Length: 463
Ligand SMILES: Nc1ncnc2c1ncn2[C@@H]1O[C@H](COP(=O)(O)OP(=O)(O)OP(=O)(O)O)[C@@H](O)[C@H]1O
Ligand SMILES: [Mg+2]
Image 1 (cartoon, rainbow, N blue to C red):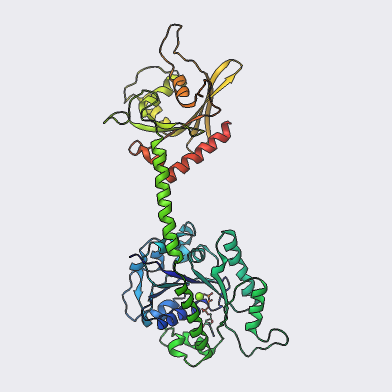
Image 2 (image 1 turned 30 degrees about the horizontal axis):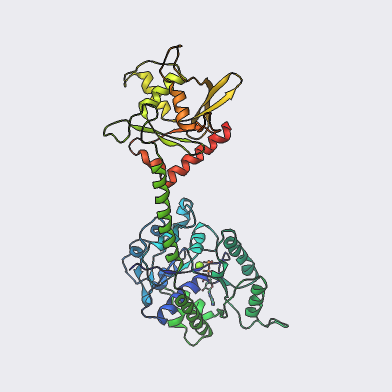
């Protein structure tokens, strides 16, 4: 059965508020509370505290958080660390790859597909960059340490970000950190902790009952001759910090146990539903395709028949299909360029024209003007820039009074844009080159979205 991790992100834009101390020690306390509870951690920090606390001397390391962000499976990056906590080694190069990270849902997606059990804690850097945003969006619980008024003011940015993105602000909660219990005030708020809690609740921020006292002992656990970082649980028993961490870890564990559906599971379900929706939309588009080339009438289902090198769709979406490559190139040469002659496939004019056609998009718009029915023809780059524009009279038959041969431009317009009772709809026909090896690929979600964007751009210019 697949497993879905419960994610705790520790975040604050303010530096030095105790994020890393909180994240690493919380991992140790949570693991101590539940032997069978898998607890893992990684950090975007470049201080390597996670590695100094959980790594074993001489432990072979395979991969780090940088690999996580470039898509390596998360379970393969986990290393069994000290105190039973698994960790992903840190990286000092995250700022170099940060600009390549596209979007804030990358981690959420990775966790949804991770098969990672238990609780995963993420320690972030003191900025709301794309890495922190990823960690925030994936989180079931965001713990925001605050130590003073500036750090409390800074929380607003995280709350605002959640508001902007329509995310549930209930997952955000503050905890007063680095509280100096010797500082006392006169009046309603007697100490730093109650003052910060008062400020937080007046701003509508949820705050935990616990707090992390400032303790010289904690500071000393980071600085020692062997370059390690020691946990409070093993090295500062009997202190108020230990007492507060024990209680806080119990609160967090209770929250974890109450959560039947972590965000990673919900996101996994959403991804599945999205996949189904995309598949269904693709199938619908596929069934709407014309089965033959509108220019030569040849069926596309015939083995070794015509080559589907262009996709057409009317601007109102009511007619769509493919056009055979040489049919369409010949059609343009004859109707638009008046070059009604046969070319061999290696004729330089033909090759040049074919190449230019496969790098352009085209629009055909039937119109009535003073002189009668015309078709406005437009050629665009594949980025939507207009290259050429001209009007052509819309004749039903090819030249000559007694000619019975239908004019292909007329046939194309009638087949795609004619209204039921005659006349044309107020719409245009849009034609775009596609990959003949995969003619249906134009209908997949991303390609079709791109196609529609170009169609929209064209529409704005010719309407
Ligand atoms: N409860 C505490 N008592 C005393 N010192 C503490 C306490 N918590 C953290 N510190 C010290 O404060 C400093 C900053 O702590 P920490 O590295 O956890 O903060 P941070 O928010 O992760 O910092 P950064 O924003 O730089 O990542 C460290 O030197 C740490 O030892
Ligand atoms: Mg830190």
